[in-house]
Length: 408
Image 1: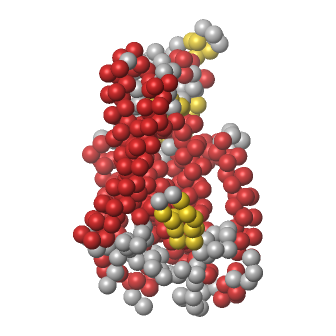
Image 2: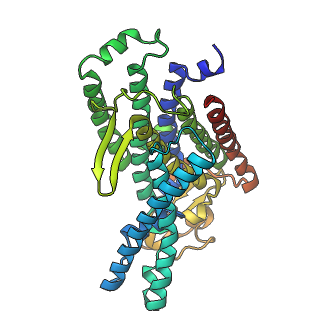
Image 3: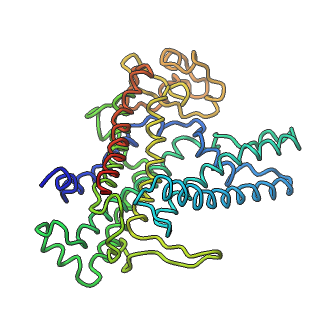
């Protein structure tokens, strides 16, 4: 019973999977960006969103050009991802056994390359747009998504919840279906494998928890600042370490899989909520075949993108940028008046100004309309906050080392 046995122990796997769910809820509740009413600006993700879903010019020709260019980006990314990155680099040059020339792991690589090429082609569209119609500057693709930070963070939290829940449930589901660690939960395993019990359990829990979570996130029925009551206040440094810890746990979930890094066996292991072990359908030009393991870890990959954005928020967070300010004790206040924020300066967006000037419309000080959070900001320098990425770097190094070691 060495390191590999304890790393993949069922109880440690369960703890890792469900701890990620809790930590993602905690950082969403404590993150001041989740309460910000300023425009959401996210590099790469914002550009892709604006390129595909927003800022269409009124001219039909430019609309057609935009659609043509992002469809071309999709095709280019999929072709290069499939044949150059996956088949040539990963399979033939690096010879990583978790990928195969038959297509294992190709969809995740293709998805990543589609994101990269869509981002690059968005700049090409900007050049065509400004060369043809300089007055169309407002339709230029940028990282500004045109929605409030608090709105985007709610969608991101729901998406992260969905990904974390599927991951945690699939880890549980796979362990109950497989035969390794045969002494573990024998009675539950027998019940789990009987008929469609596992399918009914998934949909019952998924529906109930999703309704509860979506209601809690999208409404103000649950006020975390009131519930926590300064029980566990965080600052930008502790939040950065928390975000880094979540990334480490994401990688741990993959490394703890009993078939890591090959993911070659277990073809009879079924996907959560359905009674089949893979997703297989035909498309023009080929077949789409996604096995359970790659379906699960593809979702983790998407969740990691959202977690990286969360980590970036903590590292580069500054109250003024997000329409917020701090009091002498470091508590963060959010200004909810977007019209007022458009003309705010560093002098007016401060505790001293907001609490010593009266709003002529309400005849009370501006500060009384602001939302006070339990989260704090102490102004740690970037060099100190950057240390928080150390655990994540160590986890990526460990991932590469274990992938090579366990491949033997």
